[in-house]
Image 1 (cartoon, rainbow, N blue to C red):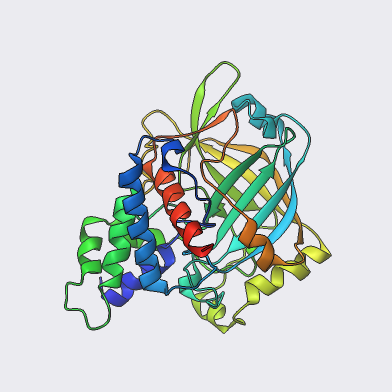
Image 2: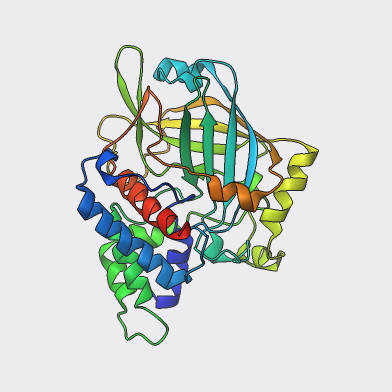
Amino acid sequence: MTHRGFARALALGLAFGTALGAAWSGAFWPGGLRAQEAATTAEQTVDAMNALFGKHPGFRANHAKGVVAEGSFTPSPEGAKLSTASVFAGPAVPVTVRFSDATGVPTIPDGSVQANPHGLAVKFKLADGSEMDVVVNALKFFPVATGEEFRDLLIAAGKSGPDAPHPTPLETFAQSHPAAAAAGGTARSPTSFARQTYNGVNAFVFVDKDGKRQPFRYRFVPVQGEEILSEDEAKARAPNYLTEEIGPRLAKGPAEFRVLAQLAQDGDPTSDATKPWPDDRRTVDLGTLTVTKAVPDSASAEKALLFMPNALTDGIEVSDDPLIDARVQAYAVSFGRRTQ
């Protein structure tokens, strides 16, 4: 693969976070990573993002460009059969969502290939006053399996400019990590944030009333269907066509997504986000996400927002996927830097 070809795939695959989060103490993150080791990897990861995208004070290290909206989630009866989570048991709950472009460049054109994969972060405001977060993006699987590998991918990209001798560090990385290039090819530019499917590349676990555990991955599918542009069509659009389109669209009518859970079978890997499960795995309809309006001041709203992959509720747990912890750690570093 040429450096240009893999660099393009890398740009498509930089989906490590949709929203960069809170400065929590590492001792309280689940998953078993030793806090100091994780913090070191997280700092190096954010450093590598800053090297690739530049430093933009006040913005997230990745998925810097975005827009905030509000709506609700209405559960189906099926979710309550799989999980005791209150979000599936009661009436509709309010949600705050953030749609975003990839990269840490807050002025990136929405139609650029580097703006893929687009992201969707959802904060569910539960009846008891607590919150639950879901963070998904347009990739069908992730480029690497661990936080350390993602850091190494970013560093390799930073060392593989147009004048780098071949094989470049990025080409060398690709030889030993075939999913890195393949993942990027699974995301494309939509006509609207409301017309794209968003996937959960990480596995989580439902726990039902009998204690039965069921690994799953999220999928948010637009009720109106996907509407994808060719690369040339996307490039021809205005630089802010996605971020400026969603508000007027919602003013005319809500955007709806079916919230699905793809259920793992015995033997399906839950600790490796580079390995999608077969398409024939059972998919359960958990309910409908209805996005009704853009917030009046998105720039201010998103600075206060925190979406964390491990911000869960009883009845939903993290799996053994190491990327969940790695994302939380990197979010904390980025949040701390952008709020200084």
